[in-house]
Image (cartoon, rainbow, N blue to C red; front, side):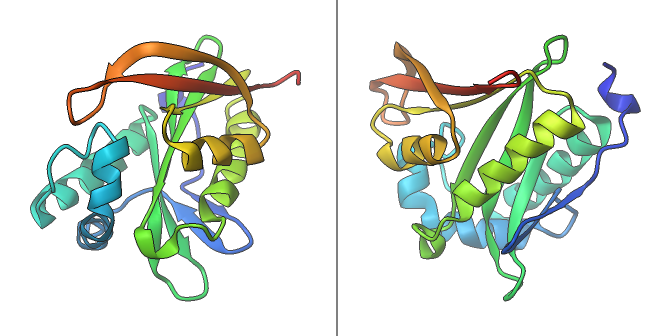
Length: 187
């Protein structure tokens, strides 16, 4: 499969959300959500070591849009269909096109936590991976201490395949264990 030759939809609809690829100009709302949520993002997300500036977030949105167009990575933004508010972000990250296999990542702004948006997004992205790309494997990895993230994987029908001990460093420098969840096409 050659990702640059795929005609990849840039928009997914769920019951409550419009999920779409980033666009130039999205940096401001992304930055506002990161600022609102930074305390918890900093604990769990390796990319949240420091608080980004508005320019950093705009640069990220533009680079993510370019990677999406090229078929390199599929970062997505979650928007509330009713209010139009930016809820958070997710992504379908290619790990091996020869399988094909992908990893899903996600975060939601603090004011929208606990409302099922991430689980709804994970269901949609999982379906997207299997139907759009013919995925044979989709994974979710999270810090073993991040019980809320693990619960999302479990609610979305993922199976815990293992614990990768001392697999990464947390932003505070401590070693962390990583939970590895997956769904496969024949299950």
